[in-house]
Amino acid sequence: MTRTVYVNGDYLPETEATVSIFDRGFLMGDAVYEVTSVLGGKLLDYAGHEARLARSLSELEMTNPVSAEDLLEVHRQLVIRNGIENGLIYLQISRGNAGDRSFVFPDASVPGTVVLFTQSVPDLETTPASQKGIKVISFDDLRWGRRDIKTVQLLWPSMAKMAAKKAGCEDAFFVKDGMVTEGSSSNAYIVKGNRIITRPLSNDILHGITRATLLKYAAETQYEIEERAFTIEEAQNADEAFVTGASTFITPVVEVDGKAVGTGAPGPVAQRLRELYIAEGKKAAI
Ligand code: PMP
Image 1: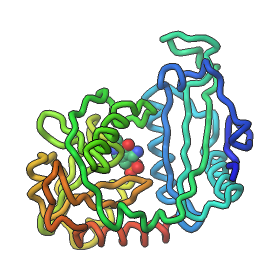
Image 2 (image 1 turned 45 degrees about the vertical axis):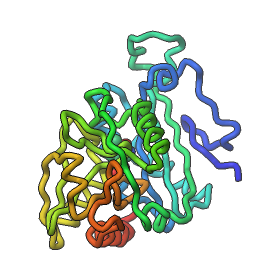
Image 3 (image 1 turned 135 degrees about the horizontal axis):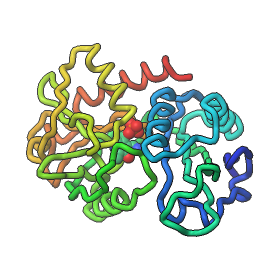
Image 4 (image 1 turned 90 degrees about the vertical axis):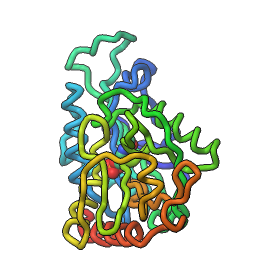
């Protein structure tokens, strides 16, 4: 099926949607993005994604050419026009078409390029990864120092994912100064007894929207939250490990660098948190 996508105010068939070769997103990786999941035709954690988008833009001195109200309507229209029951909405805003290539930002009067498209994922709630868990490798975290800004500069995470694939694994835990920062496209956690341990927020990691919501739910139930960095060895010896992300919710990690975590199967805490996140997320979805 040809998707209907959104480009700078227009809804178009994907085959007719174009962006200039001079677009800053294309030439410089000068763009930010968000991914919002859709369950039962509704948007999960939308307010969080909207707020983080505004922060990413502001940190890069970019303005959003679309109002908050209109952007929500674009999300809704894409869900309707593409008949999305379960899936994802990708949004990208670049600094726009500067008309040439230059390191200097174009004048603020140049409007940003806004692109949104959908990805249908019918089994989003029950993906094989969520049922079986994933294996991860450790990978040197050589990304730039502003990982808190959600930019489209995803080459190193792509290289980490490819290294994981070559090793017969699904993902990587980035490691900086001997401590895990996060997954290649997720936040990382370990579980010890009743305690959920995850790295505190800083410029070292993306401030995950799923992370914020999950920690709120977890604190409201019986879990203790400890925000501190952990090592690969600690992850290998933990009761459980898991990752979170808007497109994967809570996904158990069953192996780290070839060593089974816990029993080597998805653990009860990760499974319970996943159920909780999906159930509460659906109730709050808009
Ligand atoms: N860290 C990184 C590096 C990511 O790419 C992502 C997902 N894009 C996350 C964490 C998870 O963030 P969220 O829960 O907002 O999807």
